[in-house]
Amino acid sequence: SEATPPAAQASPAAVTLAIPDYESLSASQVVPRLSSLSPEELEAVRAYEDAHRGRKTILNKVAQLSGI
Image 1: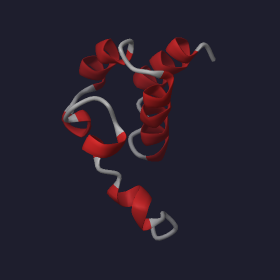
Image 2: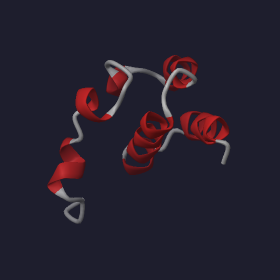
Image 3: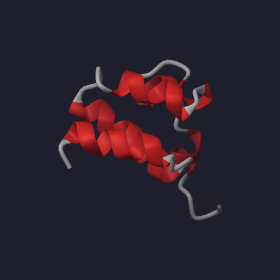
């Protein structure tokens, strides 16, 4: 979408997300790793999923771990 800022399109996983190779992992591979992340790292994952793939399993686990 042309409305997306270039920075959001780039979003290199290695820089913005604490889980290595995040973009290539399935939701079932990501969820077990979420419990070891800091609140800031969880927020980065939530923002990434909201902007890109929107995987409910991951978003629900992030919300649970964040106490939302």
